[in-house]
Image (cartoon, rainbow, N blue to C red; front, side, top):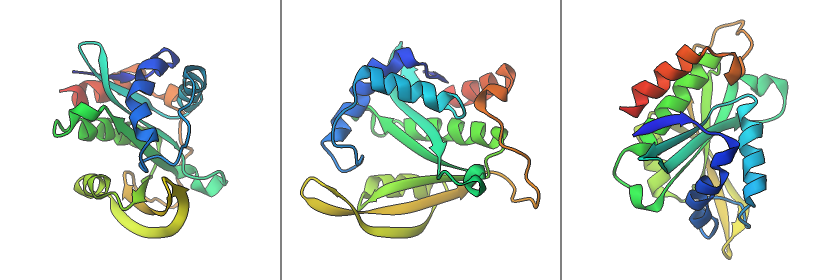
Length: 190
C-alpha cells in the first residue's frame, strides 16, 4: 500500500474511481468531467491543499483532497474534505488512512477545522465521519436536486488544531518540508 500526493497525470485513473458516483447522490455533479478538466482540478487543489492517492501495486484504490470551505477570508482556517474510494474496497479501512493523512497534513499547514458536506441521507458516510470524530453540526434541507428527488446536506466538522486567539497564516502545501509530508504519508501507508 502506498499513499502519495496526486499529480495531474493521475486524472484518468482517479476518474475511473469517481465515475460510478456520478449516477448516485453522493456527488451533486451531474456529468462526469473530462480527463483534462479533472487534471486541472488536481493541479488547482495542489496549489494550496493536499490531494492524496492511496494505491496498491500501482493501482489507485481511492483519493481524498481538501479545498476551501468558503471564499471569505475568515474561513481561511477551515477546509472542506472530499473522499472517493473504488467500489470494491469497502471494509479495508482505506478511508481512515486517507482522511488520517489528509487531516494531519492540513493541521501541519495550520488549518484548525476540517469540514465535510455529506448528502443526507447517506448512512455509510455519516457513520464514517462520526467514527473519525466528526460531529454533525447542522442539516441544510432540500438544497440539491438529483435523480428525481430533493436532497439535504449534513455539515460535519472536526477540530484538528488549536483555536488560539491570533492564528498564524495557513501555509500552502508546498511550504511544508518534504520531510514533514513524507513522514505523514509513510505513517498512514502502514
